[in-house]
Image 1 (spheres, rainbow, N blue to C red):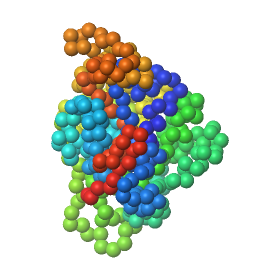
Image 2 (cartoon, helix red, strand yellow; image 1 turned 180 degrees about the vertical axis):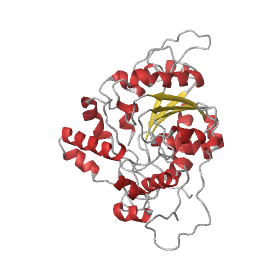
Image 3 (cartoon, helix red, strand yellow; image 1 turned 180 degrees about the horizontal axis):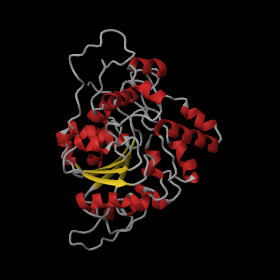
Image 4 (cartoon, rainbow, N blue to C red; image 1 turned 120 degrees about the vertical axis):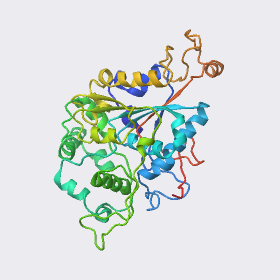
Length: 374
């Protein structure tokens, strides 16, 4: 996925970033390295295997912290709020668990359809592939971008046919019905569903599901089809998610097959807040017809509770920032530089599917990153 999934809705009131901007929040949309917006590197070309040699570990150790640091540096703010969806939540869980100081910079972490250790896949064939040796997956899909031909097919297929193929695939893989998402919304959103990522990151997810543990990538992991001596003298390190100090708000769907809330809560701090949306599936948190009434109120409540409250200033979409004066009076805003600077917000809010790395080479109009030694 990429950040387009947040804004490809058919109704403005169901678009969370737009609604947050209307409430006066400064919204930043993130993108993972490797997707269509993050294919530049100071070290390697996207045509090389080195470029695609990344897993969730790189997101956690480098990309999330770098992106948060960049946003805080630009906005001159001490902290922000993080709203993540699916893998964007997994990356935040991992990053906050291994970077203690990062917790001081995240006022609240709102996790929509949180992903940490999914129970498995509905389809038996794909589930068997997931439990096979990583070498089998690499042999089948290569060591660069996985299923890159998907972008070609979605560009040449008649949109209703493409939507039907996606619906059938989601039913087969995850047993999702998609009943909460309207047909016009599917036509608008499904073309944005796929974005490039590495085969290694998918292998990492298979490892997590196979071992039933939210753990770091294991280069030596074996499987039923692995060749050679499988005796092990170590285990991959689990992400220490109980060490997270930022407030966590989990908002999950009662019909989401990728979320095992019981397992997840055992790995998180006791003060974690949980909200269930009955009959919601994974993608409903992005595109359901009633997402604004069922989900957004929990997001607003989390921001108001942990991150300084709701803005009372009504501002145009092209201008972000002002909240209320310290005495509670509503601030007026004119679209000039001095007024925007004078009424800068007390908090900045990050809305992210996932993030990309900066490593000193990040710029708002030309996003690049350099590979780091791990």
